[in-house]
Length: 212
Image 1 (cartoon, rainbow, N blue to C red):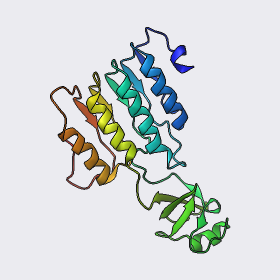
Image 2 (tube, rainbow, N blue to C red):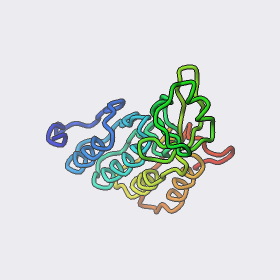
Image 3 (cartoon, rainbow, N blue to C red):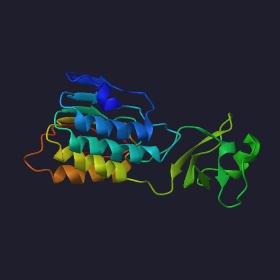
């Protein structure tokens, strides 16, 4: 439906902050495969920060679009949690402590039950409390082991793209491991790659570590 809705002469498309999620990303992949006019697309902040698993899956979907499209020169993928990092604030009542198997808790109970470093279950995943309960009864979670499949897919796709020259990956919680994935792909780039600019700001890379 989206591919049919795009005007054949459209050069730029801004879909930032649309919360399209994985399904939207797949629709974009289909649309870009059929489109031969777009040169710039903004997909910043299209993933719900509360749904940690969506970031990597969204990255895989958009990477598929980059492989199919031959006209895009710039894409903004910032703030989509591609690195499967820390969640936004989640109420303590929504998590389940893996050690006691009990369901929701009051804010006071959750504060005692879920100190930083505690392993909990949320959205079917094993997560770790990265920021303890605050005065609003909310906490933040991060995966026990980050899923870097979305980062890997994007890094590979942006280098084999026939047209892409610039990509914004800022604020995706890539961390040091995600940064190394991107750096490895860039290091393996051939002379045929058109990529000239990668924005990697605000990704919690190790001090002194950078992607040239």
